[in-house]
Amino acid sequence: DAKTTQPPSMDCAEGRAANLPCNHSTISGNEYVYWYRQIHSQGPQYIIHGLKNNETNEMASLIITEDRKSSTLILPHATLRDTAVYYCIPSGAGSYQLTFGKGTKLSVIP
Amino acid sequence: DVKVTQSSRYLVKRTGEKVFLECVQDMDHENMFWYRQDPGLGLRLIYFSYDVKMKEKGDIPEGYSVSREKKERFSLILESASTNQTSMYLCASSPGQATREAFFGQGTRLTVV
Image 1 (cartoon, rainbow over the protein chains, first blue to last red):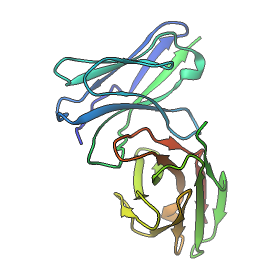
Image 2 (tube, rainbow over the protein chains, first blue to last red; image 1 turned 90 degrees about the vertical axis):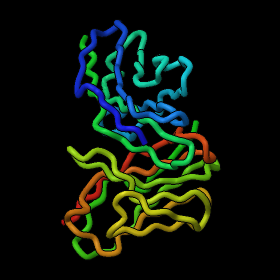
Image 3 (cartoon, helix red, strand yellow; image 1 turned 90 degrees about the horizontal axis):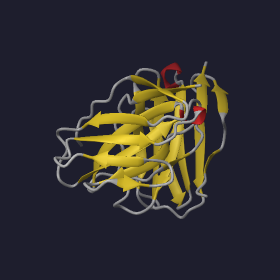
């Protein structure tokens, strides 16, 4: 699986959009990009995933660059409950496991 | 909603005890996983199972074993608990082979004294 680079921490004002970047320059052609988050004292929660097209669901949007070397998770209107560690995880079809890195600790500020 | 239920939220055991951590999922998922999470080390995969009675080692299987006799239940066994197995243990399940949309339980915080 590809290695990832995420900023260790970010702040976002409540109600504003939170844009969380991830660099995955070694991603291979069959690897999807998955995003999870982990709120304190809870298990990780799946957010969204994509291959090369931008994706949107009720939680977030995922923007993947055309060369697929990086992606951005967008929380359009961050709330205090979005304070969590966010993980970007490339994962190929042949692998069962998710490899969690250190992620980005997002703090939403009132 | 998919539910992954771990039998205990907190557990305290003595060194040398045999410890069973139980996990049950209610969505007929093929795959089940056991992770442990430690500060500074993140989540690490211990074992996973892609079918009943099938198991595969993850990154850190030493000191652990697993059992999957029924599709909905995946047990993690510490044959002889040691203090370095004090950790948060997380169970997860996912459907099929092509998806990594995993659903996690709330975790079991195990302390070995």
